[in-house]
Image (cartoon, helix red, strand yellow):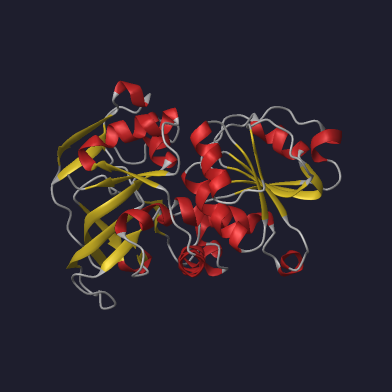
Length: 340
């Protein structure tokens, strides 16, 4: 099969991935073989190709927002059928027996493995996934639109959960104010759901296209990345992988506010001033992957509330250019690879 492979991780402009021939994968026991019909381009793919994340699998094929058709069943698979449409996301597998898995925190499993990092992903014609980690997808969202929901959407939802704004005690408040720093693939999906759930969203981001998309989606205010919010925020999420944003976001929080950091990679956070940025019981919370429950719950909510990705399709053969454009902020929303 034709598939992209990370050769020598480095700046994306130097071409650290190449399109090559790889052996067709085989569905092992408990796995599905999936023909890729669409694969979203996530910033985590950029971190894998540029070496921000350590190499887990030499010459790995990136991509973990996969929509595809089941074309093979491994031994023991009974819950899926040939021809069924499925989604493959970032979390590829866990051990299922550790203390974290047993308490419902499988995203913290020390033995967790990830699609497009530990195993070959969706920048290819074919991919495999354990059947227990494949998602059934709503019928009324097409392949390209739903692909970014499988990571950007799910992780945005996890970040929103981590703010506490959806907790029972907060859900009944008259106004819940949320700041979003960065407005790419994940943020623009999270914003749609938050607004649908009655949360007042304030966006801080660079780029005219991203700012206009935020306005079009119903943001209460839109400003530059380091602007002060027009009102104290109950919570905030940083989507941009830039540690320098954290002090700004913390200063924008009201007393008792929570900052949720959505990225898998973040540059160093500058020294925080305790009085201005942490006092009054403000909190910083990280986000580590997601559970399958998060994914299933988000896909139901996305279908119910009409959450849709703003997408920019690229042919699979142009994956390198899609990653270059992602890094440059050349598009709003999300890029999606489709078969040539």
